[in-house]
Image (cartoon, rainbow, N blue to C red; front, side):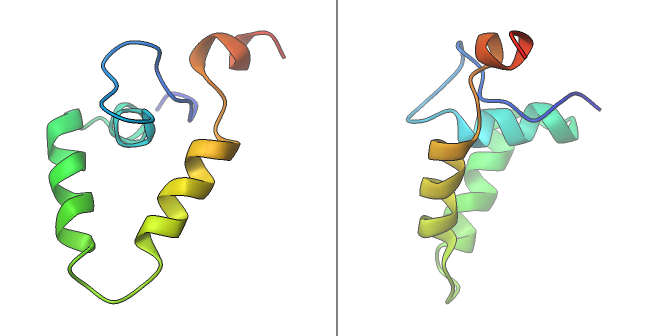
Length: 65
């Protein structure tokens, strides 16, 4: 598995779903559908997405550490 980071290419909004999909070996579209379906359930999914958008580094920033 690769490190968790938001990719520069293949983003739709913030790159969170694309980064998670890359980390777990899935297609980004599959991860986006899972996220959209999870929004139908009660819970803080949208807040979690925003937090990951803020705290996950971009791919190029992650390699600088």
